[in-house]
Length: 285
Image (tube, rainbow, N blue to C red):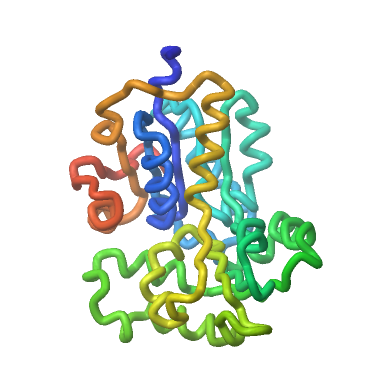
């Protein structure tokens, strides 16, 4: 293994949603250590303009390179990927850089009714990148696309609340119900939506609410596992894969530009990482 293979992988999102991608990365790459940035102080990206999102993406990438000497970067945010991934690749042409996109292709492959729902932020669903992806699959399935204003932020704000309690009364549940009802009938019958693509990494943490509303028959597709597999392929290709770093999990760092307690709560709940591995990103502005 080269010396560079011991360097961490940077991962970032507008908030805690990207922890769903980090979860998949840690499972696929158990010997890698990660530095995760939750840019919660500037969230939500999905309601911002492309210029703002691109500015934050470059600031975080520059910070991770300069302060943490990352060997690869995972943009664990659909909105940031759509707005800034091409520019980021030009800024760091030698570094493996992995973005995320809504899992439309896997949904087409497994849908039985041929009618697929897609939920995401306005920024993601209005992007040229998403339009190109959707256009490439024309004729292969029918897509019902729904922008979910406020859902990512509601999930972010619910981080400190007891999970799986009072789901019927939660703002997350209410928004999930409102937006899925607007999409039309879900089910396995003719003309019904049998698959729901989660086009925002935050939405993985609303699976319980979505399943309670839509039922156990509906398939939910997210991006974490495909992104983790792609990260492994790129690292192997460039000889950067860590294979013998037994303390990788304990060396992983989680940083936030927002409230530290929110990140600590989310890290413990979803990644089982202790509060000591979370800190404020004080040098990131």
